[in-house]
Image (cartoon, rainbow, N blue to C red):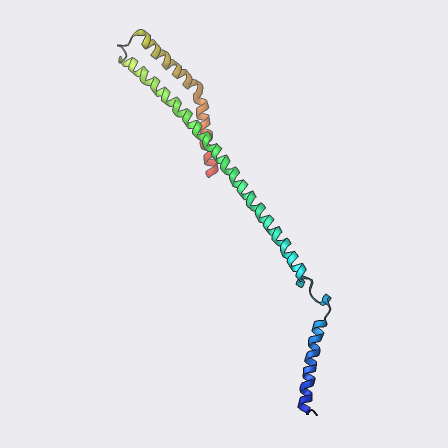
Amino acid sequence: MFSENDKQAALADEKFIAEILNIRRRPAEEKKWWEAPHITSALTAVLTVAVTTFATYYMQARLKSREYELARQDLRLNQARDAMITVYDLIATLLKGTEDRTKIASGQYDALSDTVLSGIVDETNRIDARWRRERETAEATCTLAIIGKRSRSG
């Protein structure tokens, strides 16, 4: 027969085994829904797709915004450059005409024939006419380019 200690140990072992069997027989509804393997993997996949899609959209929107801003800045710089080239061209021709007039007035072109001298006078008159015709437009274009640059940088 068993001693009292052996009986107590057997009862404790039996109780332990009964608890393990109860845990194993526990119905599936007692588990939390998010602990189910098929739900966890599906939920992870859906969240991964959603986060990846959102991140991709956000990055594309930011890149498109930057690309648009760079295109606008390039257009502004080209406009300012074109305005400056126009002004420099007008000033250069005006200086050439002024130089020719100074040489005519100082007598440096006296050795030239009347037809050549008349051609130089006609050219300086065309230069002056072009200057009068285009100076307001060139000045306005340069002013707008400078104001536009200041307003964007400030």
